[in-house]
Length: 389
Ligand SMILES: Cc1cc2nc3c(=O)[nH]c(=O)nc-3n(C[C@H](O)[C@H](O)[C@H](O)COP(=O)(O)O)c2cc1C
Ligand SMILES: C=C(O[C@@H]1CC(C(=O)O)=C[C@@H](OP(=O)(O)O)[C@H]1O)C(=O)O
Image (cartoon, rainbow, N blue to C red; front, side, top):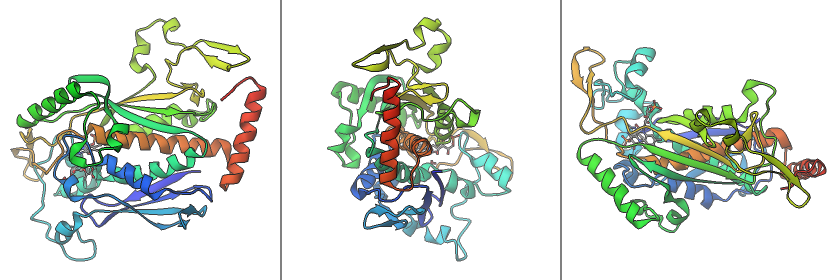
């Protein structure tokens, strides 16, 4: 079973993760993994931290000569900012707790409940781990998963469909960004829309406020039958939602036409099925976003995620001091103003992990060759039943 665990604080030395269950002999393209990490750092509206970090993967085990060995893969992404935080964050020596103390807890962040639950008088101990810095680990893991699935033509894209009140089908196009990898220069394909969005972000920023938006992730060339209807915790839509809702600031997940299913008649929601010899079994539409009964149908998977605005506001909201309980405005931590494009890269890689996990469960194989022959025999059997790739 594909699984991972991650560890590390936002301003600690490194983010460490261990990914277990990867078959052997998968060739890893390190530049592609680093490119994903770089994309996650981009997007108009990010704060000062992204000028400090230059995220790169450092593989510590489980890979030899860029090929996986079949054992757990240990992954490090260093925090460059640790140099500036050593005297506050060093795990092995006494540190200065006072200077970086956060006790005017921020609404919308994990600060308050984290302090109550873990019995801290300092939300620094909470925010270091609740921070979306952790998403760098998830992107590194997802990027490896994508490379496993590339052997089977399964590929992933994501884009932002809405920022604040400005919406479009393809606001930020990451293929375009690939050619414009300078972090400060992540721009929109549609120039007039780009200006509108940048104006909107700047306007809100000038007011000390923040913006969220909507992200769309798409997966192409998936095969039917990943996930299962046989038990609730085997349903792939449930697991996708769990992993996406487990991403910082994601507050809603829709598959296909999503919430619209509730207001439309059945005839405008279900995807009719037909067969002809040339195309095989097909659906005439894809309103349900490539998932039926907790299983992939083989059609494109379409998922949308709603990201809330960044909770740290430069015009801080009313709150309390977690220790004195007196009224204060919330602490201001250096912060992003809008991180929807970055979050889009995160969601894409989170989806890659879930799809990869179910793919390996279904197909099975300790090594790439076994995986390929099992895949071929599954497709052959599906072919005999009328399904064509
Ligand atoms: C890519 C990304 C960047 C983020 N940057 C910030 C930030 O700079 N400041 C902040 O307060 N929250 C930021 N957040 C959101 C918080 O991490 C998140 O809202 C917080 O951990 C509380 O979790 P919840 O929103 O899921 O309830 C970011 C989220 C993502 C996905
Ligand atoms: C570090 C990242 O995002 C951080 C997420 C984050 C938060 O509260 O979630 C707060 C900010 O941290 P800092 O105070 O160090 O600037 C962001 O920069 C990152 O995405 O790599």
